[in-house]
Amino acid sequence: DQQVKQNSPSLSVQEGRISILNCDYTNSMFDYFLWYKKYPAEGPTFLISISSIKDKNEDGRFTVFLNKSAKHLSLHIVPSQPGDSAVYFCAASEYNNNDMRFGAGTRLTVKP
Amino acid sequence: DVKVTQSSRYLVKRTGEKVFLECVQDMDHENMFWYRQDPGLGLRLIYFSYDVKMKEKGDIPEGYSVSREKKERFSLILESASTNQTSMYLCASSFGQGAWGYTFGSGTRLTVV
Image (cartoon, rainbow over all chains, first blue to last red; front, side, top):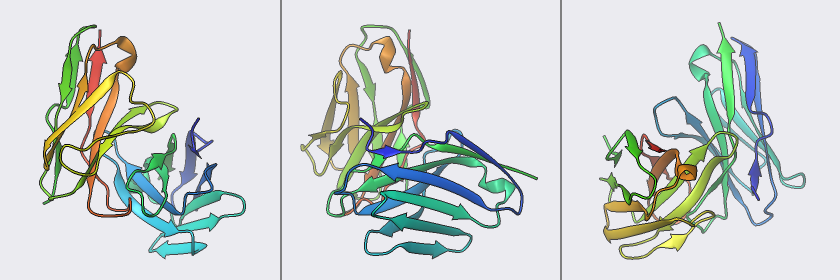
């Protein structure tokens, strides 16, 4: 049973608009959440993270929001750029553990 | 530039063969991981290791084993390859406590025929 779920396999947005990628988790022991970005033929690369003591973390165009009571997090990209087109994976772990669990990924396409 | 290197980008093997997937990191990381990536399922953890000669089962260890004889090298072994092990395999490493510092390799696409 997947502990981290991304229910939207794909998302298409226009350049300059906001992209919102969603993620849900079931394990209440998770307290550290990350987003990874993956281009074809490359391994995933770390994008942004958030710990459970915060409800928002921002890094440039990327903001992650965490709603612990709903076991939900989201990644906002504003403004979206064509170079953001990739597969985005949500991941979660218990802070003192070294292993992560990943969602199925959402393929984002940003149209010029 | 720090790296996680997977020895093969593409691999085709026959059913029943013993398959070795090699992963080497040059960052002196303690922790190493093997995941497989399948459409609709994302990345699933097969095995991981916190130190030389140590290994831990992930979520889907059946049909796989691992070897970590040296700190920089973590091998995934398919004892008798089957067609349902056709997948993209990703190796990652990280330093210390906490999962934030993963560095991934580029992946090995394995096809079992």
